[in-house]
Each structure stands twice: as structure tokens, then as C-alpha cells.
Image 1 (cartoon, rainbow, N blue to C red):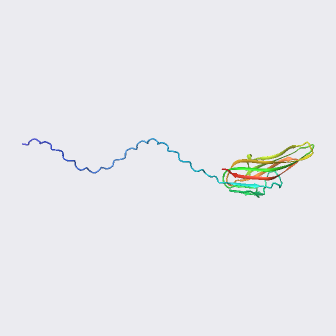
Image 2 (image 1 turned 180 degrees about the vertical axis):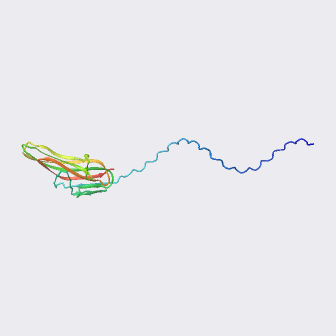
Length: 202
């Protein structure tokens, strides 16, 4: 006959660790964290530079030139020039770079008016800067005049200056001239000492 089962023996030692199993699939992406604080402002960069540009034309202070309606002012010489073209024969200044420019001119005007006992004399002379042969800048108009000289049979001669200075934006290749206009009766007009400057400021 079979006898009773004996007591369970002591647990044996742990066996050798088996090889690592294959990597499981990646888990779902977690939610995005909060945005971090802004970093400090970087140092200010170096100040930019503006390329210089200037040109000028001038005329004789002693030679009188007759004012002719709707024609350009003539000049006899050119001053220093940089990044512009000053054309004495064409009476023009051409800019070579786009930018902000200061434009100014001054012209001495000589008027002579002769009145009679029965009639008055008057004369208006005005100038403006013309852009590219067609455009008149209203800010550029300067003038000098005699108005309603009458009551005596006499001739009145008077001198004055038409001038203007203004700031405008120009494109590369823009051409500037000064155009004159005149109207009136019993009078005549000449000019001298004409100066025309174009200077880049920005």
C-alpha cells in the first residue's frame, strides 16, 4: 500500500534572469506644457546710415535774363555734387537714390512798370519746381509782383526775391527743374542771382 505524502521541501534558488522582451509601442503624446516666460530684450542694433546726396545750380548776380512765361530758369554754373547730376545746359538736377530731400531756390526778380494817367500797370512773376517734365509741386511756388501801379505817368522799377524751401520724397532718377510764369500789362520782368539746391536728408 502507498504511504502518505511527505513534507514539501525548501524553495530552490532563483533561476537566471531571462533576456529583455521587445519594446512596447509608444504611448500617447502628453498635453503641451505652459509657455515659458519671455527672455530679456536683446541689445539695440547699430544705427543705420543714410547715403549723402546733394547738387546745386546757380546763375550770375549781375546778368539780367528776361522772364518768359512757361519756360525753365536758366543757369550758368553748378556747385558741388554727390549722388546727383547737375546739368547746367538743361537747367536740371537729377537724383541718383530714392530718399527724403530738402529742395530750395532763391531768385532775384527785377520788375519795371509804366503807368499812365488813365491806366494802371501790374506784373506777377512766379516760379515752381517741376518734377520729371510734367508734375508741379504746389508746395514749391514762390512769387514776386507789382500790383495796380497807377495814378501818374511814370515808370516804377523794383527788385524782390522769389524763394521757397520744402521737404519731399524723391525716387531714383527723378529730374527737377524750375519753371517760371508771368502775367501783367504795362510792365516787364527780368531775373538774376538764381540758386537751386537739392539735398538728401533721409
